Length: 151
Ligand SMILES: O=C(O)[C@@H]1C=C(O)[C@@H](O)[C@H](O)C1
Image 1 (cartoon, helix red, strand yellow):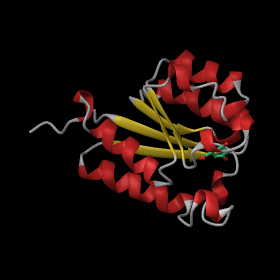
Image 2 (cartoon, helix red, strand yellow):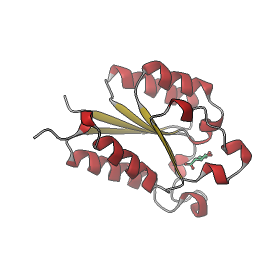
Image 3 (cartoon, helix red, strand yellow):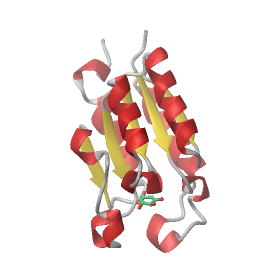
């Protein structure tokens, strides 16, 4: 069975491309997902993506990731980064390694964005690289042992 990556995006990230482009850029979420999918396909890695504006739907998708035996999660929890113990508990509870990814440099923004409920349990945190952060996260995962292409 091919190793698998799940990309999760939280609230308002469905608006990427038109939402505050001076902060989040002009690339759409669909473009991000398609690019990540092509990176994974080239390496024989299964890729899936999910976005929701609803905390419970994100939690349910994280739970199903364990059932599906997803090997790695890349998550941008959006505003839930700063508020959601529930999503933190879900991702800790399924025991799937994850990278926390933010388009903007949250540490240069409002104080309330400096707190994350995820960073201390993440494999890595990527902030401020724009939507390239998603590509960086995928490329990192693809070079880890479990994901390296077997000749
Ligand atoms: O930079 C990002 O991708 C994050 C995205 C959001 O929607 C914000 O609520 C976060 O505070 C930052």
